[in-house]
Image 1 (cartoon, rainbow, N blue to C red):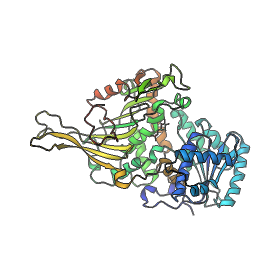
Image 2: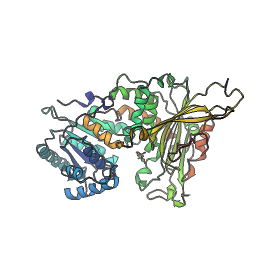
Image 3: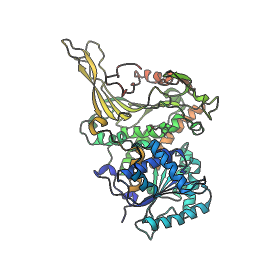
Image 4: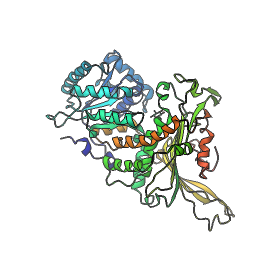
Length: 528
Ligand code: BG6
């Protein structure tokens, strides 16, 4: 008998990938970008690696009329362009394409779902998929409830009581609501059809190797946990920088902005994994219980705190690397007087025993000088009684967890330069995934799709996590709606508006420059 999702052991505990069962994956909104760029290439690579059962069927569900053949050709192009492995392996593509189908229907039409149910029965017979269904909601968020309701009406939601091997799970893409109220409504609507243990809210950052390694790093090593607290840590910085601009996603981005698009989900996830207590066990609920406690220990910001502890910025036109780059307001489908932020920085405080008084600085922006996501843990400096007693500055030890690119970590320590005098400089101890284990690294969506097929929700977001995070974000959005602080501007290709530096300077800190993978030498003691 298959394990119910709540009982499925976390794959974090396993040294081997569990065997996948045959199932039907249905992608709603299959003609969208995500399917071609991420989902189908992920299925192709999982097939290539032998991680999926050979009878894994994929049905693309979307409005536009299209034949199976047309859909397959488009998906093939997607793999050729976006797969992490190249060139396309014809024998793997054959396996994928033979089980790839297209189902045309509007999201609103109940008849489309009845026909889908009939198609499922026929596919179950043909491929022995045993009533196991994974639904992937990759539509616009305004359609999530419609799709879920229609699945429920067509009897495609709840598990068939006469089929103990069948399961039904739904993966929900972000954005999960645009504030607490809409997230609560969405949770309630989905809960009418699916139990919480069937719902897999995706945050693709949790599929990244270094993010998963956070748990291993913290809880499989004896030396970090004793110093992982306010007694030894001075501050924490979390940066997710992107070099790209809004890239034709203006319609969505105008309603979102950096705070909702990145901080509410990806950065808050990085924060909770950094700050959480050791879980009682490595299963989905134990880990998520601890993450929720962190969120509950962060008080929503008062209007005065929003004015003092947050920064919002928007990129302006600039010449970057000799090329002209548009300002945000000149991009497609952006209002010429748009107030949407493309950069956000926030100082958060976690009011619990471990972290009281330790600032967590979060920043994320588009059109930064380069792409990079890092968590920097600043330790308190050594007492300046021996070295540094002459008033010379001893650098903090900094632990840098590099989420991307060049996944790995560095520890900055003070070291003596060679020579007859004692000159102390920061030096870097370096761990790089590439160097240690070779460059193979599955894409985030591969890992997450596979986990959902195995019923492991450890790396997915629970309803109370979403709600906890929105409570904090809502308090910031409320201040911003009252224009406090006002929107600042930064030229494209820079690290955000000057206000972002002032946010840290007020506390006697400064942002760590992102490690530069093109440089081997230490760059942490330099200004950018
Ligand atoms: C998405 C955001 O969730 O994450 C995008 O909607 C952003 O705006 C993307 O570009 C960044 O993801 P990654 O994996 O490229 O860091």
